[in-house]
View 1 (cartoon, helix red, strand yellow):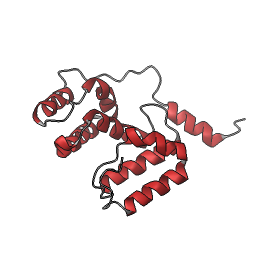
View 2 (spheres, one colour; view 1 turned 45 degrees about the vertical axis):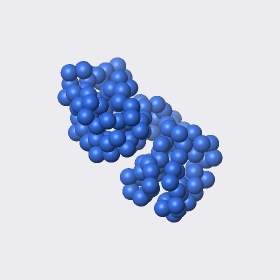
View 3 (cartoon, one colour; view 1 turned 45 degrees about the horizontal axis):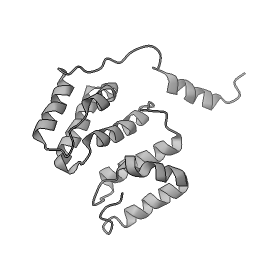
View 4 (spheres, one colour; view 1 turned 180 degrees about the vertical axis):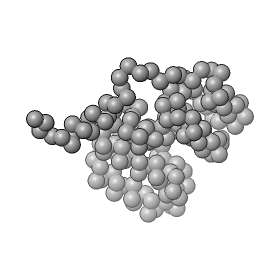
Length: 164
């Protein structure tokens, strides 16, 4: 008998696809790698996108979503100080929405991450939040308090120049 069927199902779904099927890594000559190289050459990021760090996870979300994500970074242009970090943040959120993760994320972490992503996309902040800088602090205070902090930030969005 299974004592906690909901947890069992969640765990089983979380493990789905983690068997020995390898996701092919995009090669340096793939369209995705060429797009990243072109962006690094033409956009003038403060730091170039490290394809080695994000290529595998871009492949995991599929070409359509991966190119949409690259287009988003390209639209933001040189304003993105760490395009690799930005992509990792967006990939983490996308994989979480697909039921996969870059690393195992707690449900609280996922909720905080999704709220930060929503604020970056639709919150009207003067500057995007950098989850890599604020995530650990928000997780440390707990979900309820983190959401209150983010709600207050949204309310004061026009007065906060650097929310990080």
